[in-house]
Image 1 (cartoon, rainbow, N blue to C red):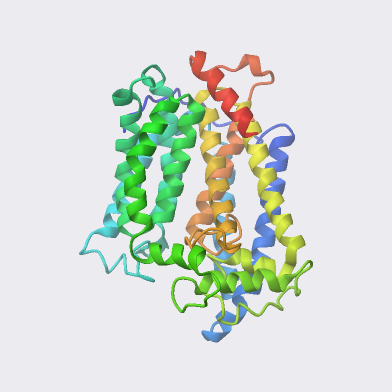
Image 2 (cartoon, helix red, strand yellow):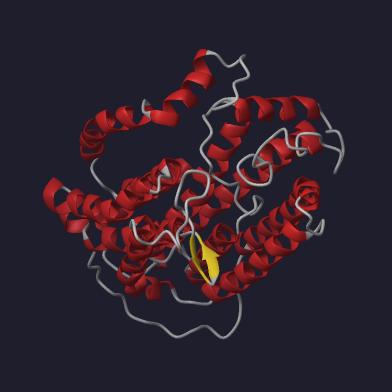
Length: 406
């Protein structure tokens, strides 16, 4: 997990970024945050009162996460991207240690089993290390991809170091178990390598290597029943694997074109478990209807499109890959969550960025947005003036890859 540190710059005096891209990123993020807090209150007020809590209990907790996340975003937006190259290795090490602590058999006092999984670490505050690991993997993969440019044609010296580094994170995440988060982390890492110029043949080799393992994982335990309930017999209302998906579809269908109205949804009355988190898009569909659902999807599409534009104009390869990784995290989480709510994917437990309840995920994603703003701030006036490393053929390949993504 050794990466080449870049030169450390000084903190800029003012500004989060320049150009319309930065303003658009901040504006879209702010709209999603405000809409998320409103939707979260509608989804949790009844749940809070049924637990003898104040009706705004969950809203207050989420608001604290948003406040910390915005502070992290402002800080990360002002940190030179070269600093992240230096921090890549330590970030991976800390994430790996936290993930290993969670799955150790003698740490259940601080990492208890919740809903059949050990995903949270309670050390005065409750954090979810897998969320921290997402950003760590993005930074580390981008940094190592810059260093490994000359060896990308070699499987052993090019792709193998990435697989070894990812395994340190993915193995404990799988042991929690949290298969969906492991898939997001792996997919984000692979997208960074693709844009960075890795060989297509290596991806094909990796697919052949992973397919048997993935097939075994998809057809084992609760994941097998979720696939069966989704595709083989979706009309049945089981009490197990397919219950959430079925109730989610009821919520989406009940909303119609304009929704039943804010706070008037029925699924939050215990019919749809995890309505404030894993299935909050279903609540949006019920209360805000087709119009509200499409508006949220378009907001994410716009954010992703602008993020790739920022990546394309980055000052060097590391900044470009860093932006691609950040955008990939948001895109993968958002559209997998939406796919689950619409019944085209099995239940995964992935939250909707900036909207679902979850403070660690909120803070990490807002910090990631800050990194994207830093990339935009450092972009040169003219694309031809980009500096910061030899790019050669790899630059051309990565530029074309990002252009295809845009």
